[in-house]
Image (cartoon, rainbow, N blue to C red):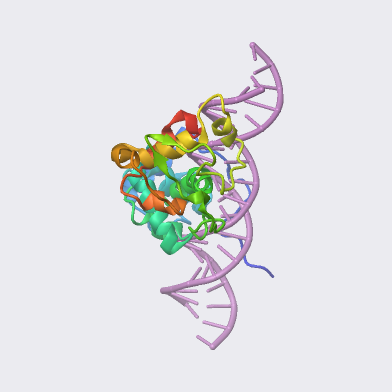
Length: 222
DNA sequence: AACATAAACAACCGCGGCGAG
DNA sequence: CCTCGCCGCGGTTGTTTATGT
């Protein structure tokens, strides 16, 4: 005999919540608080299981939720926390008042993972996907122009369809984007001389790096 | 304009932790 | 100590919206 289901499935609604259901749940919780999720739907007059009510409240109805896009500072912090905590989304979310674990998890899966891949970083280990020891990862930029024989992305896995945009020689070049990422904000002057980079992680850690370089439409992110 | 595909977001499912009996 | 059942978490799937062809 297996374990009994957490709730009676027969007759319960599933799928997207209606406005009426949201109102019922929100009114009930605001008036009565949360004691036991199992009884919430019954007392609130909802044909949902307690689990579904809890999720709806936590991820959508809570009045203290902070809606809207993640800032670059938040993304940066998510990455740092993830490198220490792994996929413990609830722990990570605890550091972001008004954000939910589901929201952070979704953002990680849909956006940050791609950015890390783009940078050649393994999203699980936060380390470069491949180690390289040749000199191609060293960039020397002199007189404000990049050298034409190699580019900074040549050693990383750029197979995503979106990168077709940046490899199109008629538009933005990979070198342009690499330079753009590096030079964002206050770095232009120093780059006019020469610099060296070994790994993409260095870009993230560098003080001049900002995630909003990805907002540039030429990168294909949006 | 219509269709296909990708991206973003919302919700569900199953499992493990943990407290109560 | 064992069993039961609720809660919370993380993985996954489903749905909607945006974008490309």
